Image (cartoon, rainbow, N blue to C red; front, top):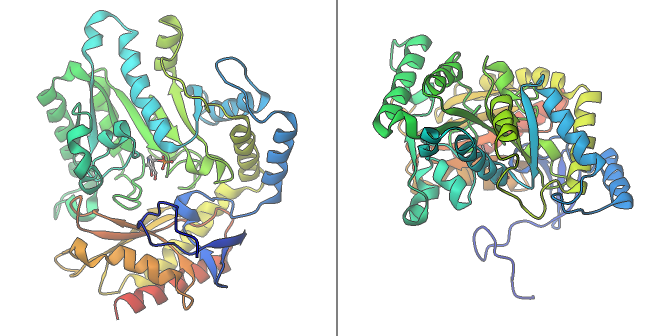
Length: 447
Ligand SMILES: Cc1ncc(COP(=O)(O)O)c(C=O)c1O
């Protein structure tokens, strides 16, 4: 066999090879048909091999494959940007298209900083960001600095920016006190954010950044009602921006196109990615709210940031086709309907399991948190690799169901989850297949 040249995630451990994909299924070279209950990493939201998307990609290739966006524009870029701003009811005024979630986050950090340099001199001293522990915003040095996941940051700590500090996530399963109401919990978190602003100097903070609904490093935790609004109020009080990271939770995953629509809050900057192109092309975007867009337009008039592949025509045409399908096939309604069924079945079938501590989510974005002891909520030690075990067992031929593993949810190091994030067009039968598969896997891992 030829040497393994790909740098795999586990360096010399070649993962199963996929030779074909169709709908919800991934076919491996050794004959397994795996139900993709995770859309990869919550990406392939239309399922695989949709002919309408392929047609749109070919049509774009027939017109123009690449332009350099500082020099030229293309209809597909105009169309997807307009779609996105209109989808926010005009709250977002401008769209900057990139190739991944990480790049969208990098752009958001730079945009937030630049916004203040567009204002009068005292604002120029704003150089800091406040983010949350157990958060994930990407893996480049800037986005990693924003993220609050200890294990992912650990070895890079000495080389990442030190201008980000972290407050508690909104994580009721572990952090809400016994007898504390939602209002009291939210007030406590708002107070903590206020104290952090005071600690670092309120006029030094560019933005508070949070995932609207937490992803892999906390596991599909919907914000407690009123939480994001309260965080925005703290930001507003100090003139800082609110950046909502919807790379994973946005573009329909939680049942509305933008997850913030369910939170009574509008961000100043927003990032989206995964569901935007559904995996048919790499694409992410930064959405820029009125206040920031106007300051830039009145100030220097240009964003001090660019990348060779920004606004890539094929990616834009792909996203246009994907978003049309989500709209025309009424998929957001299906996300809400099948999401409710998924919740019901997960809770019925796994709620009583001795090692399933929490089942949480919204839309078609659900997580199971595993614990050693349900009463104390003691997590498994990270060394046991529970989440990874569940993931790998799922891929075995007896189960053939793919879920996303995550670790570190309890304290940045320990605490295992798996996420279930199927395609937006799943049927009731698909949801039943997923829950049956996941239940079988869990019973095999925790006999
Ligand atoms: C919330 C969030 N932000 C940012 C990212 C980074 O996106 P990407 O992996 O596309 O660079 C991710 C990826 O999982 C994410 O979940």
